[in-house]
Amino acid sequence: MTVFSLVLLTYFMVVSGFVYDVIVEPPGIGSTQDPATGAVRPVVFLPGRVNGQYIIEGLSSGFMFVLGGIGIVLLDLALDKNRARSVKVSYAIAGISSVVIAYVMTTLFIRIKIPGYLRN
Amino acid sequence: PFFASNTTLVAYFFGKEIWDSGAGLVAAILIAVCPGYISRSVAGSYDNEGVAIFALLFTFYLFVKAVNKGSLAWGLASAFGYFYMVFYFLDWVKHMLSDTKLFQEFLRITVTCAVAAGGIALGVGMASGYISPWTGRFYSLLDPTYAKDHIPIIASVSEHQPTAWSSFMFDFHILLFLFPAGLYFCFKRLSDATIFIVMYGLTSMYFAGVMVRLILVATPAVCLISAIAVSATVKNLTVLLRSKNKVAQIGSTKGTSSAKASSKASLDQSQPFQKNGAMALLFGAFYLLSRYATHCTWVTSEAYSSPSIVLAARGAHGNRVIFDDYREAYFWLRQNTPPDAKVMSWWDYGYQITAMGNRTVIVDNNTWNNTHIATVGRAMSSYEDEAYEIIRSLDVDYVLVVFGGVTGYSSDDINKFLWMVRIGGGVFPVIKEPDYLVNGEYRVDKGAAPKMLNCLMYKLSYYRFGEMMTEYGKPPGYDRARGVEIGNKDIKLEHLEEAFTTSNWIVRIYKVKPPNNRW
Image (cartoon, rainbow over all chains, first blue to last red; front, side, top):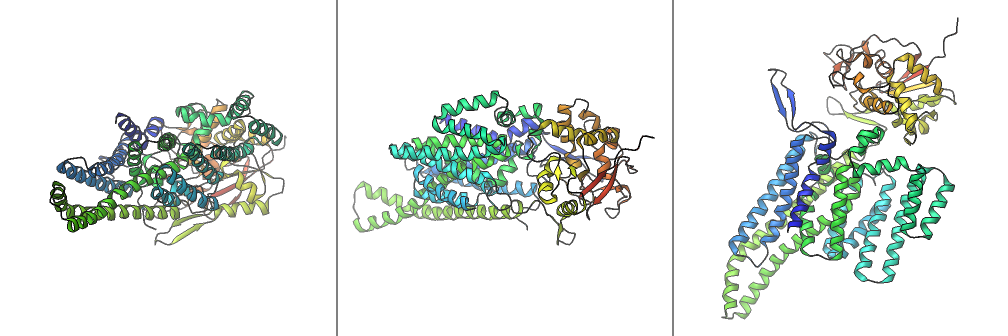
């Protein structure tokens, strides 16, 4: 159990681009100047390139991936016969919602990052 | 592509070995379309690695099979598989070493002894300094900051950069959710085979995080582990579906009055809810997999299917515009320069100029001589007079630069210029990167550093560009790739003259003038 959670933690760090953050040292969040008002607006996703990121966008995407993985694990736990029914149902609902949220958010993120995603 | 289909077959057998035939099938399907693998097996980006990954997967499959069966025959087969993979790797090393005699000695030692002897030969190679550039690249996997601080030319290759989350998402899509779930299932059913695949998966994912290119090596592990997750989940769900029917049948035909029946009856009551739920979840799983397939085909068609030599872009009305400037320039070189002319350009274009222009280049993609490349980098970053000295010493006849200011092409030499400065500065300390920056920022407009505005690369890229109108409503000399108006428009060249500029100004070739007479 502890090994698995350590593994999940390592996976989270790798997949959120932790090595990229250490080497390239991007800012935590980007900023752009609004042309009309001159105010500085934050930019969460580094635009235009697939191979670059800001720290926060990496961490949030990594969290989504791990959430999706945990969702599937919860689904499997929900189908385990040796638990009380209410626990099984709550695991199932949590699992399904985790997977759905993770998938929807990840698709949203990638759509924001790559404007031409799934468009020819 | 032939080996890619073989990889799919091997993935099936491997999945079957680790888990069951269902997982094998899913693994084969996943790896068939996974962009991480397609990037190296599709026509146009095919590389040694396409076959090497097949050899790797085949070797690991034989290894696991040998462990499971415990027979000598499989062990021998896996050893042969290992040597096949090693042989393919050595073939790649041979191209790096480019000395067949030494290579054959090396091969004989490795084949006759075991891995220990291979290690001895490896140690000898490193000590004699023959394999040191190779060592640097692999050392940077263990210490990712090493290349950035010590060897800029390794750090400059875009494939060697560490991986951002979007690169993972691009190449793996839903496999990124299925991977941790698959790890959980492997931990649940621990066996030698699952431990092996978990270790392979974890180490390859770590290395894929360090270097983008290694996503390719992680792909088989990720596909297999994801296949385990899919197979186990689908199996659970279908068991739910099937058991409902069986229980209902048994309940109706037997109709006992024991405690079992009452519990079965209560189960019966919750079953309809569960059956519908299971159906819905199955549909959800298939929906996710179909989204994965759509994503993979889109990625392959957009990112991994274009020949990099011809550029394509969308015009203002959505029509496709083709820029064939590279080939235009190389064929000009081939037809309009003396056959023994020598061309100086950045190393990215070396092989293309050699193959299509049929002229000698100073540095090319082999990048085995760092000092030579640093000399070219130094020439590009110096003022024209100092650069001319270096150009004369290298006996260069033509200089070629790639410029994206008219088309907005962003992989041009001005955007790569800082790497030339860093690599040149790594060998010749007279070139200092801060000289070209303003407050740490890299600029080419009026506020740019004076050294930047007068270096050879700037002059060659922007010669005559100051009079050019590139975009409606912008001043002349507006660089569309950087999005600024250039700082130094009145450029005069003393030692070079313009020989050819392609129709979209992407490739510019300059002829080196002979030195002035000494009167």
